[in-house]
Length: 90
Image 1 (spheres, rainbow, N blue to C red):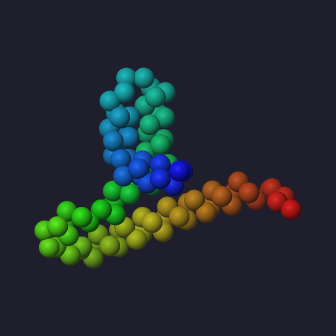
Image 2 (cartoon, rainbow, N blue to C red):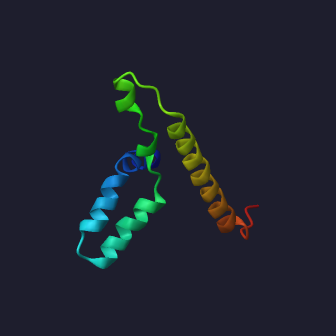
């Protein structure tokens, strides 16, 4: 279930940013902006429109999406290492 919700939220992350900008309450604005930056932006990997028109993805698109994925996974692994470094899991 968690994976499904991350998938759905990841595809609608642009809406989270728009929601954070349109909310009058400052704590709510910070909450949605934090979610926008915390969750993956899976819209970066969307090449459906170009493929529907018979276009291949440009090399710059491929490089930026791969770089985004590597950086996102690297940040997650670094955060996980910091969190679990002091825990004794034996």
